[in-house]
Image (cartoon, rainbow, N blue to C red; front, side, top):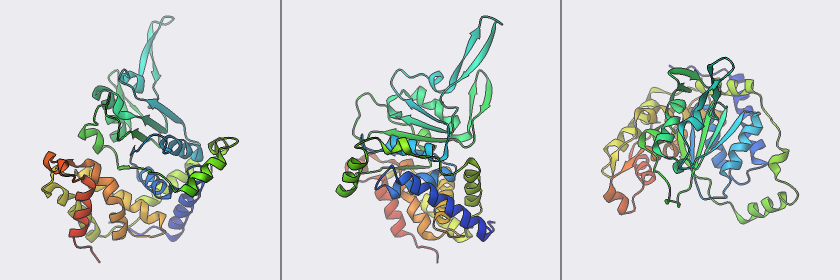
Length: 320
């Protein structure tokens, strides 16, 4: 049973979120909904898959988050010849003492950008599975814990299929959310041009919250209350995706957990002590749609996984 967080903790968590979001918005213009989703995943302990066209600001968004908190940031450019050891690290023989010394790979960072993740082979993609699920990696028969916080932002291009490997279902299920940034308005794009005449705004971005603030906000998210009726609502949504005619494979119990935690984060961002139905509905599509495996006939007919989740939300009764 969740007890409501103390008012001061709720207010502090909302203030930290607003400060961080505004700092990122000084660089990433016109993407308030995307920033809200990104931070909801981050503070609820999940990872994010950004699927969007080149040049929409996916890498900039990841860098802006890292700089706003002064996190250790590493970028991995996924290519067909990338090996698991290029991600996890490798043990190298030291000829002086005739012993092997482990050299950490880029996965040992607070924020890891897996750029164009679908360009690497399934074998290389699988190197992220343990890291994303358990915040640890197994190298040379030993388990090594990753830094806390540990957050993966992966990107892929939705229109480029040549030289890519579709992400397996197990990999997709590791992402708490998948969403796109989309194109911004003409006025906001003009503002971007004006801001980059002399230099990129990200070069002036400063850290605005501390690691202590991160752990404070994460703890505040966990304390947001959710009623038994809303827990059943979350489970009902997930169960309905498994029973939909257009779906071969519905969302997993991990999807239920991710939806509940995301709703808690969204509630905190809104200054609410309890999860409300609107928070669950806001998170449903980005949390669940990418976990569904659509029936080929439904896919050819133009039905998408987002449509399925939307239909489920419309059909199910909302707890009051």
